[in-house]
Amino acid sequence: YRAALEGTRAVRGVRDEARVLDALAELAASLGEEREAAEHRTAARELWERLGLAGAGSDR
Image (cartoon, rainbow, N blue to C red; front, side):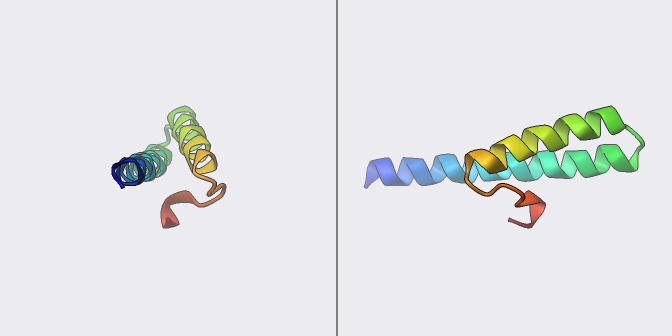
């Protein structure tokens, strides 16, 4: 039970981090900071892929 609970917390934390990175990418892009936006998008995509949700983006 404890292992499952900790695993769920870890996934939730990674999802939250991916969502934040997606939001930062959108913000950076809206400010014309394309390099930073691309970096955030790449980092978010890697996290979504790690969760098995490739292409999920901020809608998850």
